Image (cartoon, rainbow, N blue to C red; front, side, top):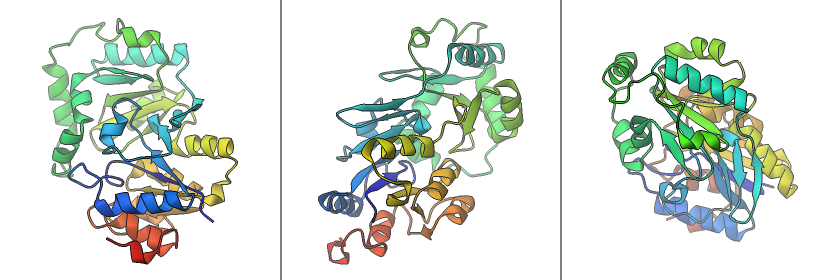
Length: 284
């Protein structure tokens, strides 16, 4: 019996227009009425999250790729960077002129470029960018002409005085090994070709999900997760039922127990009906 369901946001919970489908809203509401807890497992942080998920009424929030877990009533789990690791990230960004954004509990700060790219409206536009877009060239262009190109751009940010749970760095996939070598106390989660989410070592959506389930006394086999991209693979493999969206990456689909329709084609509702979590008669 499924007792908790976790949804990735971009490409999963919300459609390509940045809104939740009416079928998704209805499906989640019916699942909750049957006593199933429904929430998000996302790389995004708590800041403006209600707006991003189109003001859905959700029960739990696994944010910053599992580093900050909470409900509307309680903070369940929080795993920030150590001071030393954060200093290493800041030094690396400053020395290499890398655009980076730092995520805290109540605010994010750093690169305006990345902040804008996280907005729902920009996410809609990015879906139409060709997959073979020259990401490395774009990164170098932004770094070269950045108006904030100075040696200590990030070191003086006020947000660095509070716990930081995730950093987002503008970095193409080709730089993966370099980041691993420079930041051995970090893990890297990628949901697009343009930037990478940096979290403390052994951090993941699945880790955050397990922390929430332990808090609620729910087993991992009683959990279900939906996702579409690389950073969803671990959680789809790690819960009782993993569902990949029809618009998902091939590797994500391969990791899932079931592949449903796309985020634009009632995929969430279809899967919940398929597994008997909601009734087929509720289909919109």
